Image (cartoon, rainbow, N blue to C red; front, side, top):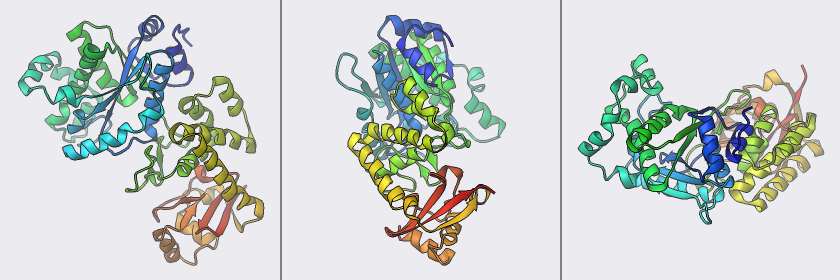
Length: 423
């Protein structure tokens, strides 16, 4: 590992955030000797950010903790176009009213991770403030001359669309120009020298770095994180029921987490192989504490999962909610479950993997037929590990196994277990 001088680079690299950096040594030197200002952009495409955004939010948190100033850039302007990165088709165009509503929802989460007061207070800005004021001809003369079609068609997003013969509108083609210009404005307005983001943003980030250097002569940097996946290959922040959202006041849409307890359960259900990685990425625990928890084996690994669930839930909902969630889980799952001889059916791991929820409910005897199980789901009565099942298409995976069993419930009083046995 490189012998970094700055706390910022030491922290990000040791905790697993680094994937690509335009100039590690230069960024490390700046972070060690000057007050580093860095930003991440968040387009307003939904009424909440989801767990997949936590990697970026945690980087801003570490930047502030190391003495730097984090900038949260809301994409009120760029959302009107839609980032084509990682997409095989155009995004749905949103109305101004919808963008504003989404923006209001997204703002809520940052105060829980960042401080907006003090000497290095976090800053929140909206790129609509400068993008909407630019005339088309003015923007073309100002920024368009700094880009060549030759380079843009080599960008991964454009290249993939062309190779797959999928259409890319001229509107989307302009997105990298607008995002790059954000860096120029933040450099001028706030002395911003760093853009952070996910690996899918590397092309947009490097064009922003180049544009800022050419237009302003500033030495600026780009830093990206790896794609965070689960040990089983799933995308971080996605479950069988949809995305795990950070706002707890959203009551519409499949997959929206509605309570601190459900959020706690999401982290408690982390796969064994992911516990150490997630503790480093999503908590403030010291690396020594993480190492101790990561070394736990067998049933003791559940102590690490509970520590992860408590730490993650405390960030978003507070310490009291984390403790209450743990107590609720203990009462409903342990006291009301495995410790009191609930009815159980033995299944092998192969039999459980990809078992449909309807089959699971009938197998343990909580439904006499698939039709009855569907009715339980429609009534909101069927639960998997104390989390309500929203769709009959839900399938079980090894991630659903807690302490060797999967708990199926109907209402508050009917419970049964699928007990995983060695074939």
